Image (cartoon, rainbow, N blue to C red):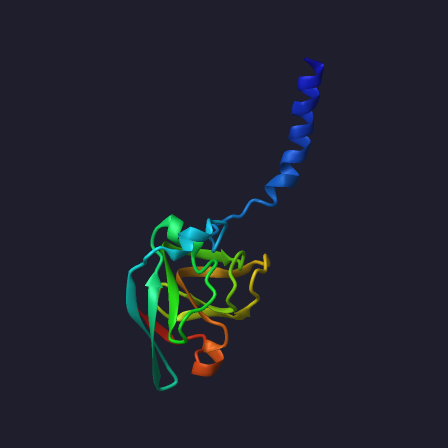
Length: 163
């Protein structure tokens, strides 16, 4: 019994410290761990347009809508056509956190706000990195393009995205 009371007492002392590490808002980790075969799944593709600075850029993107699709993302893929990408719609909009676990392609991550405008860009995310790439602002979607596409296409925060 004393052992149990000591464990409860220790837990009560530690609990306030641990609470500081609990995220206030829901966090999305994508891509996350998945089996290599899962990355070969067939996803719906749609045209996506990014408009800004007097230009419209068009891409063909796969839409990752389910939890499993978003968890897998572009993992294990070795190539992706220059004008392709993947979009991760999020409803309701929320802060988002991604990483590059098991992702072999360098990617540009574009965080899209509820008004369809780009609120944050993370360029050339390092393949296989476990570093977190986050957007504290609510994102309605996150778009992944090949690394370097943002710079090459002149895409910027504030541009409008439609799919």
